[in-house]
Amino acid sequence: MTRGSLLVDHIGELVTNDDRDGDPLGVRRDAALLVEDGEVVWTGPARHAPAADRRIDAGGAAVLPGFVDSHAHLVFAGDRAAEFAARMAGERYTGGGIRTTVGATRAASDDDLRATVGRLRAEMLRQGTTTVEIKSGYGLNVADEARSLRIAAEFTGDTTFLGAHVVPAEYADRPDDYVGLVCGPMLAAAAPYARWIDVFCERGAFDADHARAILACGQAAGLGVRLHANQLGPGPGVRLGVELGAASVDHCTHLTDADVDALAGSETVATLLPGAEFSTRSPYPDARRLLDAGVTVALATDCNPGSSYTSSMPFCVALAVREMRMTPAEAVWAATAGGAAALRRTDVGRLTPGARADLIILDAPSHLHLAYRPGVPLIRQVLHNGVPR
Image (cartoon, rainbow, N blue to C red; front, side, top):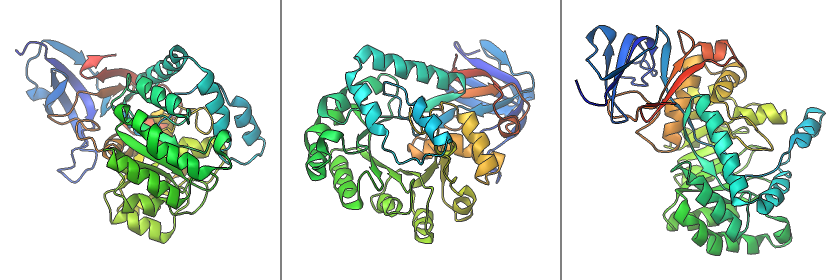
């Protein structure tokens, strides 16, 4: 018996995301899983389970990898519920409300911002999200972008510098000057706390030339590339992301055939954010088109106070199945292994030997219930780094 070992057994359906048998979810029936030192060290039939120091009886339930939310904006202050209500009454989403959150965030204390991130991170964990990426983007000056990332880094290693979210009001007539600030002093202050750099490449935000310049500066500083692209309409963002070797291009709501072909011929993940379409009354991305073309697809919440104030990956899975033509299996894979691919992580999003022991036990016999029973709190228990939460 190994000291500190934990056996999870009596698993009715174990989703491993090991596709050696041609099943992308790598489902194992009547299974067990052994954890040591926060890592999965064995999976197999329950009848062959080794001894362990501690045991969790899954009671025939389904066990999945923890969700990997690869796109979230958690460092902010304020509330935009009135903006949401206006959209539900028929107003069109333009992204302009971002500046409202910028003002509130700049005025907030570190403790207030930290409390918001902590609250939302706890919400996510209760709903099965064990890995999350957190962006800046509501500071939009040197000091507030740096402190946003410093606070985000207290909660995750996947932090993203999004100084190029929109042009702030004080630079409204001088966008070139703001790009210079982002590429210079802001990047220098933010880079020590960031793993990634991102740009909102969209009408009303940053065009392709500005986005290319900012992302190139981020790459030179050692940051990986991500990109908000093609949310509000067709544009150059997706192909720019592929050209620059971005780990992920996110939204992908309005795609041309050339965009799909570029993604299909690359290692760039298309991260779809159905919570944003739900909250803005916008058309949903066509995930079926992307999957049939061979594109790697991820799902994420886009949790933010304006256009997608949800922290629930199960909700996004259900939306993807209902509105985006994904099968339940495809949506679960996208919310776990797909998110890991979007973060270029190999230690999460799967339950195979060598993976981090991040897993969720459903109060249900199958992963199908995540879409079959939308809105129902099906997460019975979460293990993060092998520790029950």
